[in-house]
Length: 152
Image (cartoon, rainbow, N blue to C red; front, side):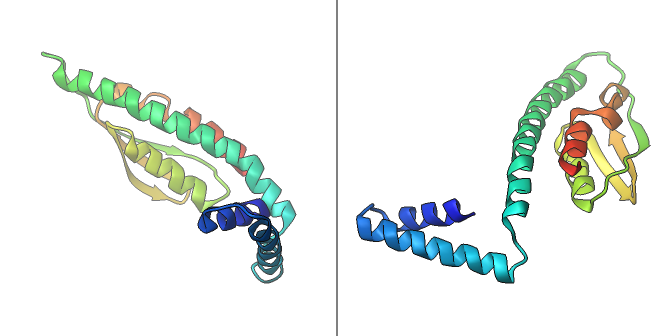
């Protein structure tokens, strides 16, 4: 966080001089001290966020990849002549520790074409899938695996 404060100071100033750098180092230190003292922040928490940041980038990569693949699968379903689409409503349970993980999984499912999260009730998810082929492996998807790593 200290480095972020310092970099923002340099960016907002628009130039780099000795005075700006020295003053930026001091301002960043004061701001970092303030958030540690009054906003329940700590270097230990910051390290935990940095460790989880890699998993979040992985999660974002897999989300974009799954959205693209689901777009093609949905187009194939819609454009295939004579293909009978079999919509299905599935229920499964995911035992996450936090509401944030439930939120991320529910929205990731909804963002992926062909699937919509209908309801989340505690640990139970109800998902509507355009076709039963899109429902395969939702409860053990890469999203679930990464969210479990993030929570660990």
